[in-house]
Image (cartoon, rainbow, N blue to C red; front, top):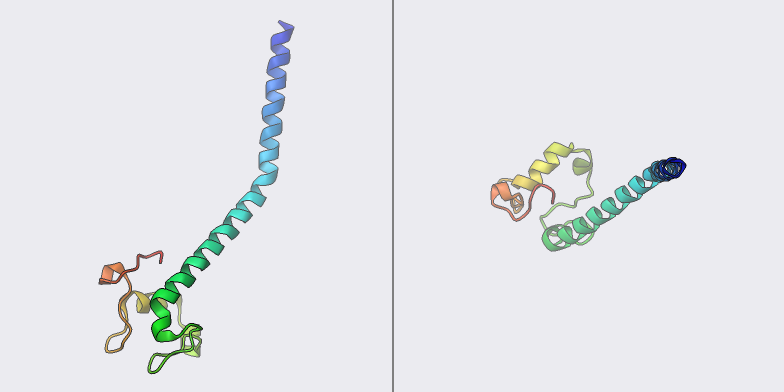
Length: 111
């Protein structure tokens, strides 16, 4: 009978220790996962920009010909929703096409 208590106590001790270690390292794991995800998203964004945007806006966003530079006061001050709509729907009467799948473009909402 004593052996059963010892086994139960040992198992509870191991589980409690494992849970404590998991809880201690979880914030670090979450922070690393967020950093990894951000790095992956930035890399994917760079590829998309190079494939789809650099042709008109330049490799560094400097603007080419009549296409505006992306580092401008107007774009820096533009709120997120407006900027999203411009990219998704394009600009009427300009060379800026619609990029959203919803508007017959090639990019999904995440892209």
